[in-house]
Image (cartoon, rainbow, N blue to C red):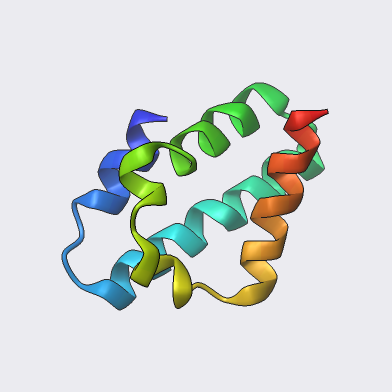
Length: 79
């Protein structure tokens, strides 16, 4: 989770930061396909931390299909 947080927060540019969020969401897609749930939990945990969830403007420019994928992964872990 720490790598996710630091990699996103270290970027100052809004669109580049959104690109890093998209990168991690694509990683989630691969982890789910591999059924690597431990790593999936770590990445989702990083993306749902308070510092990253407060980045409203950044999340607004993340592609909608990727946000949906992220929410699917969160729902999977909530079960």
